[in-house]
Image (cartoon, rainbow, N blue to C red; front, side):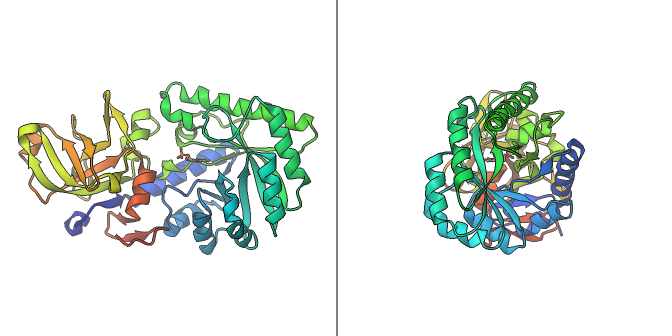
Length: 370
Ligand code: PLP
């Protein structure tokens, strides 16, 4: 029986073979480039999928919250970097984790570093968060004095051990396929400049950690970096496809959504699948801002995207889909559409569990059982 027959509500569907191939491909690229691979687990948030990484030799991971770190620590991950600037209100959780595993955290100012150190009970690895051009968080790469002060505060602390410099080049999402390798190389060059300033100030063994999915997919070389941390590549999504970071065949996840109304007069169908399933992240398709690409169930998988179809708007549970008239005539209420979400990390988090194409439920950190 096909997995589609048992779907009653919006479900994250994943193709295990593609997920495993995506993991293998990135692990091999990291190996060939001679960098450490510390994948970000915020995309899948699943202990079971974590094991698929372990089978490819992964031993160190990145997460985006201490809660996620605790979940993966409970599933025997011993080396975890929490890639969010430290939240001083969670020191108790930091201490609990640091008592058990090799915990890495991000710091970006000397004062927070001192406050944290006063409350720490165990050793913690510290990375200085550098803004190499994305302008989300981090100390500006071209202001070495502040970076040196932060490094000094870490060096003077009792519990913190300086690992190096970490950046996230999220600006790659707002550029084009052709410019991503240059942007990636530029960001590593900026990190190298910061490293030189720290070495000149007497610091030693400074590692450089980088890694957004578009950069890690499209850059021909990781030269100058010591570690990469991509996460989204495990599923990819419509944004990555539109940027050119993946082929359609590498997309490993869709949201299967039941059709609940047909409006052929305005070329629209309505699916049970809204912002609480797909998220409000958008993706540009041929100049139109959309919430995802639209495919049909096809055999045991999903079809290629329907030309001219897209997710036009979302309310909490409703998704309005634009479809060519000829396609609507072939559909009935109760059929399924497979939506390639704009951003798979957010959709996976919202759905809280995944279904493989052979109907196996994959649990995630979220306690929802779908
Ligand atoms: N590192 C950090 C600090 C991040 O914030 C993210 C994603 O937001 C990643 C790594 C992974 O990047 P991507 O989602 O492009 O795979």
